[in-house]
Length: 313
Image (cartoon, rainbow, N blue to C red; front, top):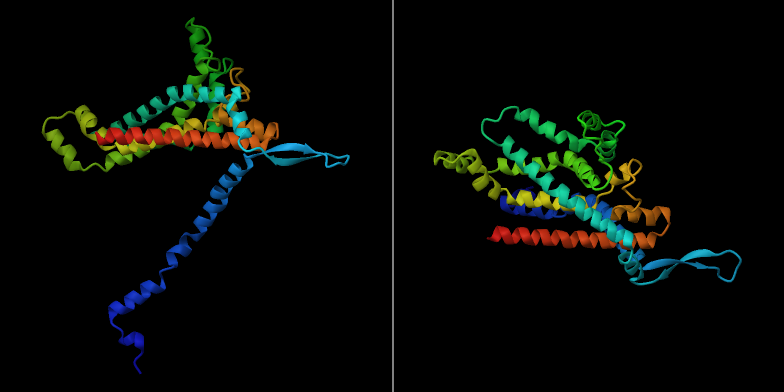
């Protein structure tokens, strides 16, 4: 006998096959969704919930007292916003960002344009060489540069002393901002360069060739064609640089033992670490974390709005 599946038209069999496998994509993304829910969404909800409470001592009428959570609403947020250490940390981050972000993005753009220039040699070596520092952990990079900054071990200080210029105080104010920015630039230029370079490689060759045939130099091609066409990539790298600036922690925390200019609450994340693990005040640390996240979101929205407005022009 001839089965129904055999007598069915080909289009009907394909439609039934698609319907039978319609749930397959959901099963495939289910593990990633579960991990995202467990390690991202739920912790965020718990952090916001915990920030609404505070510890209080409750004896319960007995001899032994215990700490219990008490609802305080936005009390922790008011305490964080009135904390001078948190505000000073935001100022330090701002000054650090003013130094680090323009240099980071500028060097990434310059390196990407140089590697994309016609006739440049050793591109196969230059790309990995610029990117390799990004693969080094931030703590290791901070220790490496920290010993290069110390007057007793710094070859730079030996050179400046031999020239009669004295010792350069890399780990003191105001040099500390440039020293920290140098570590971030050294480790982050390669990653941002790869993003911009990838965008440059996607520009149609006919556009660049026609500009060169019209007599445009490589500098004119870069300024008038390449940079305007990779603006989305530059905005993306600016977004990453902004988030990295607000999340500054590894470098100052590592160099704190080498520098008296870096306090235990030098940046907001160090203040959050103090509240969470040194003073055992998790609700206050949760409130500070939520505020830092809100500042990051607001700053990101402003950057995206400015970029969208400029691209519209």
